[in-house]
Length: 373
Image (cartoon, rainbow, N blue to C red; front, side):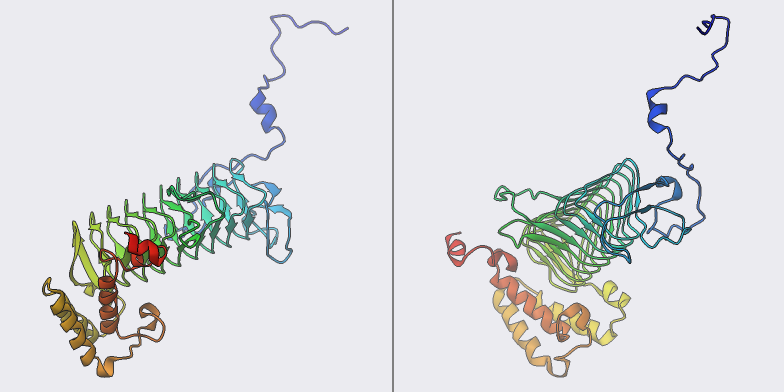
């Protein structure tokens, strides 16, 4: 029988806590350190943000091996593994999620069922991506953003709806983007190369086209359309079913309850057209003569409140289109490269057809529903 230890004898075995037992056998996480990368390298988390470990890749699809697999989730470029997904040990990833190679999931993230995340996308800490959300490639989502939550619509009945996000978007802290509704097209869509800043809310069934910039605290109501290259200043409130035209700009804190024409700066409460957005057009290297044509058209279209004057201005501008009927700016002006002045005229006419200046609202529901309002 071994002798009992007396109080005078030192403790030879260190005290082992439950935490020590839980961590036994795990590889130590390397401390965070400066990597020397520039601040422009946003497509990777720092080494200290991701524990180096081996773990199943939940719902992994794609790559050369395909199917499910086990592999190093972060090997620092060593080992020659073609399929690498970095998942922090505190993150919760549903087995039904599909993560492509190069995805990084930071601390305390939650990734739900039926989520698809494309190659190279990074979720910083505390990001929530809920069921029915698809993220394309090379997106960066910052802390506390919530993507794919149920729409805030009393008519929503729990249907199978979606949030679709394209490639190379930056979604900043505390942004919220909701899924679509059954009667609104069933999906919310974010295009490519957008910047959605801190605290932005994008409601159900919205469509945000490529290269839009939406500044801090902006609120988009349901069913809004933000066209190519539009900019929205901080704190703006956008009424549901509103269209923000291509390459337009909405001033900060604006109250937008009517459609904003393309190429135009709108400001105020309520927001009103102020001038042509020459800054955006010059940045995109539009010819000076095209910009001047738009400025002349703006003066004709918005010189007064009389609807008859507006209709006369549109007829005059259409008659003068002539050799400008086609334009090389097809990327932002729609299929076929519609002349920018004609596009502006078309947009203004649709506003006049719409409900309270919102063309998309005139398409809401059935014809009987519209007659009843």
